[in-house]
Image (tube, rainbow, N blue to C red; front, side):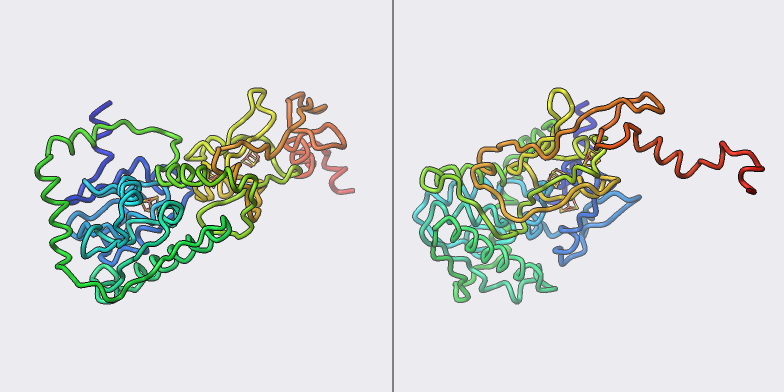
Length: 357
Ligand code: SF4
Ligand code: SF4
Ligand code: SF4
């Protein structure tokens, strides 16, 4: 059991890739390419349809950490969630890859919103980004700017307007020195790395950054009870299921990586918890009748407290043709399989004379 867990974590220097958490590796129906698109060193590659990290190409810059929706990527001794929690309690206000972090893109919108809830002002050092070797295609800087701007917009809806400033004039320390801090710590703690690799894989878990964001939002809810977020921000996904289309096959529930979808005890209703959803779209992709529809906006209470909403409630009837139970939508009590059969294979039961006539 332990041996199996070890081989699923791949390590390149201080960079770790937990393949069990990668949506792409776990779910055939997912086409996530976030890490591949952001990496300037082409360090991610597919071998037999599975994602791997090329240990010779990875520079362990940490620029891909923030883009992974399921936190499959990490750096030893730099944990973005822990860092942001500690940083939000300090008087310091500058986040800089020249001073205290590997890369601003190790964080994402969740972290920037968290900072905005607890700090009135934050400075983000982007002075090295344009020339940075990890930003060759410009996507890293573009992503940092986009995430900070979305976080500001979101906070505004909660009537929070912290000063977030992008700084282009911070005195530059050698980037190598920052990375060295983490490398040295890792070498000092060799034993603990092995311990990390032995952590068992938790199926259906919510990423820590989502938990962090919800904990921050809860502190605001006394004042903003029941507030509705209207904009379609790209870090959440609100769902509905079209009643006429859903067959209650439960594939979406089975394949949802975070447990955001679940069945009621009697298996007739499907619940959705927006606070657990990572917007991976596996549910929509896997649903054969294409029953999922995205809806804009969400209730902040529902989000922060993981409240479950009923997406659909089925009525079960027994098919008059095959006698199997099925999700009844009204009209004749005949299941979809029997309707399909009579429509497409009706000719099997006709004589040659009937077919010719
Ligand atoms: S961003 Fe994360 S989930 Fe997506 S392919 Fe990369 S490692 Fe997998
Ligand atoms: S929404 Fe789609 S995948 Fe989910 S139970 Fe209904 S038909 Fe099946
Ligand atoms: S509900 Fe759908 S989009 Fe949300 S995490 Fe589950 S599978 Fe992904």
